[in-house]
Length: 402
Image: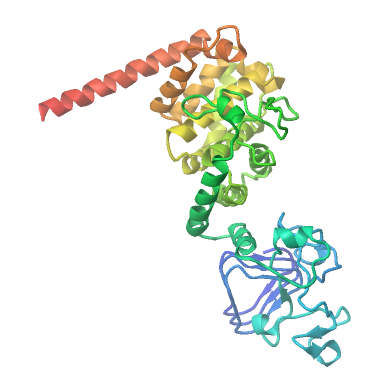
C-alpha cells in the first residue's frame, strides 16, 4: 500500500499494489497481481479479477496521474493504451454529463469492473505493432502483450509462460551465427568474454570497468539484471527481488545463468570493495552479504551450469579492472571468494572442479591465466579435489560393505 490508501471493513487484498489515494470499499476483493491506480475506487462488494490494472489516466495525461512512478516498459510515455472509441466524454455509451460519478476531469470508468460506486478504467498494454504504427486507429491487444503484463505482476504463476518462452528461445538460439558460436567454449560457457550491444563481438565493460557476462538480446540483459539487484533494499524480502528477476527473465528471454551472473556482479559491488581491501576483510564482507543473498542464488542455481556462471562472474570481475578487479587480482583475494562461495553452499565442489578443468589450458600470460594460476587458488583447488576423492572413496567403501 502506498500513501493515503483506504481499505474498508471486510475488504480483502491479495498480493496487489494499491497506489496513492485509492479506496477499496467494504466487502470488495482485489485479486492477486492487481494494480489499483492513484485515486481509483473499487466499489462495495466488487470482486476485481486477478491481474487487473485500474487507472484514472486518459491518453494525453502524464504517467504520474495514473500509477505514479509504477509502470511497465511495455507502455508508452503515458503508461496506458488508447481508448477504444476515442470518446472521453462518454462511459459505456453514457454521456459524462449524465454520469453520476463524473467529475471535472470527466474520467472514464468501467462500472462493470469497479462497480456502480467505483471509479477507474481498466488498462491493458498495446501490442508492439500498435505502438510502432502511429496511423493505427482503434484498439487491439493480443495474448503476448497480456502475458508480458501478467509476468510483471506480483504473484503470477510462471509455468505456462515459461513453456512458451522455452519454445521461443529454442527458435532464437538457432539464429545464432557461426561467429557467435565460436566464442563459446565446449561446455557452453563464454570464455570469460561476452558480446555487448554491438555486433562487433568485442567485450563490454560497465561504468566501473567490470566485464559484463551474459547472453545479449538487443539490450544488455545482465547489466539490467545487475541494476535490479543494486536497487534492491535489504530491508525488503529477497523473495520480492526474485519475482522481479523472474519477470525480467521471461520478458527478455534471458536465462537462469544471466540472473545469477547479474546478481553476483551486484553482490561484489554492494560490499564496497576497495583496491586496498585485504583478503580477510573481503571474506568477512562477502559472508555477511551472502546471509541475505544466498537464498536468491540458490533459487536461480538449478544445476552446475548456473553455479559455474557465478564463478565466471567473479572471474570476470577479477580481470575487469577498477577497484574490484585490482582487489580480486591480488592473491589470495580470488581464492577467498571461491572458498566463501563454497562454504556458504552457493557453489559445490563439482561446479568448482568443472570450472577449473576448463581453465587448465589457459595461457599463463593471459589475464584469465594469471588469475587462475595464483598459488593460493591452486592450493584450494588441490584441497577440494582431495576432499572430493576422499568422499568418493568413502561412498565406495560403504557400498562394498553392504
